[in-house]
Image 1: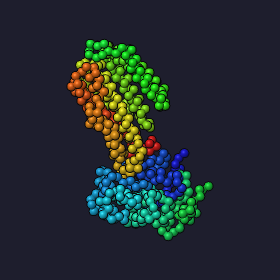
Image 2: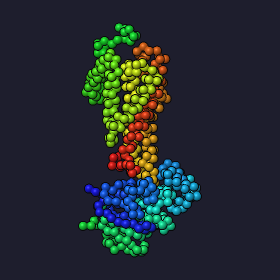
Image 3: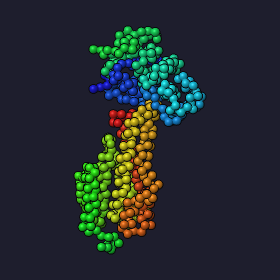
Image 4: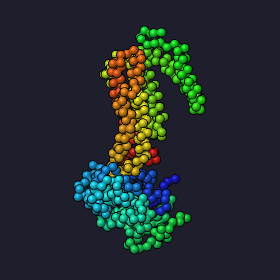
Length: 228
Length: 264
């Protein structure tokens, strides 16, 4: 029983795609296929027309940085965490650069000296986003970035992601259940049920409302009915 | 009666008196409703049968004094140790048998060669009186540390999957991403040996040393051998656990630096 079947889509550079659908519909798996944390048994993923299997997986993961659902901070300060970068990536780890990475995600540079364990869930998640941004990725892949957070913290992370999309010209692919994040990001929505694409709709402009009733129902916070 | 080497020989009826000790344990178990009577009887019988069997095998290998019998026995002991190490893993590791066999054989071979050939300078090298008990001690410790390290590696990888994947997602290689788990697994396997070094002789006399003293060796010679043994077991446990973990961790990673989560 494949997790995903007949899934085909494109994400334009500097646009965003939101993956929505009920739990277990294959959203996270699909996201993990995009940077080869997971290997599709069939089909291919292309980046700039090249099959990602032809790319060095470590370089691919720096170009398309994935932020996991549960923020993982390693032992030590926020600065230590931001500096957790592969040596081969030659990331600029100077103090001003680290401070800027924090500002980019809406955190004060004073956070650099804070111990990772003293941070709130939302702060942790923003530090992991900052850590991913330090590698100057072209795309940011986010796996339910607000799922582990309470509403105020979730709102802050939504603000951060929406702002980054504008300021960094990032391509963003995000798995989320947060209608607010989808509205703020705009772009396209891919609605998955049981590993199959039920709807793929692009919204021109943030105010635009989707026409597909299942996507609309989802955005309205209703539980979408499974398609027949 | 006194044997010529200064050890009191034991007759069968004296062994019978020792069996009475097990009788005491069985009575205690029955009176306190511990429910261990059956296991005690089976255990006592197995103790006698297994040890006699080993005794006869060792006696004939000693009497023959041929290198190939010694090597054959060492191979058999290694196979048993491998089997036991794999059986001790709480959850099977893919390719666990080959990994355990490699880790135990290599660590034992290196340690045994150094101790027999360089330190003690046993001539001929296969002298069963030295080769077999020394190999036995090394194998026993290598086996335990390999299993300990393997268990710890698995439970750490399972508990810290997110951490590994966070590192992979940042572009770390698979090897770098699992390095913290490799380190803690080897540490966990070595800690009993290292803490044993701190108290050796103070709390309890080590078994080998006790045996030598019972067999009539001077305590000073016995402790000298014990020092060799402690250091030899330290290197054997570290080599066995490190090799096991290094080989095992590779099974959880793909060439494309992915974690095989379904194996955990």
